Picture 1: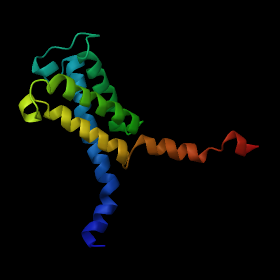
Picture 2: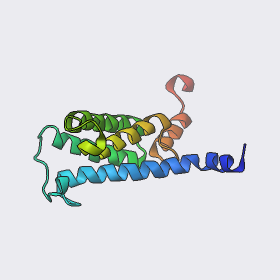
Picture 3: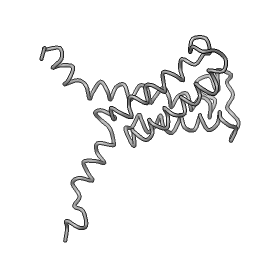
Picture 4: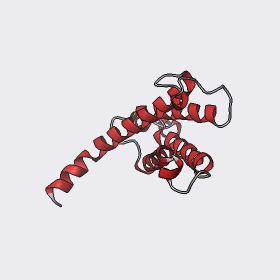
Length: 148
């Protein structure tokens, strides 16, 4: 194994955690902008999406909640799966009807988020995740059958 590969393997969990933090933060910001009108608001209008409107409001809630969960590394895989699916829906239902390619239909962000979150489903959260603390804690507690 080369030195570069060895260092890359050592850094993998930390780089994955950094990837998770950045992607989750950007996703949560996107949801917050639509729900609360911050960061330029929904689609840069300064406004919010109306409560309960399909699919915009539900997408924004998924973005905010899943983004925050992914940033914290809590329930990372289920949150990333839901986020990936919502972005796949956004791409195929909202964007692809305009044109075939993401550059033509303005679906680059939906496609990138969908694939980024799908990657997290299979790789897990990396280092510094609350999931790891919960798993370590549950392994440390004896099961009721073992305690007898």
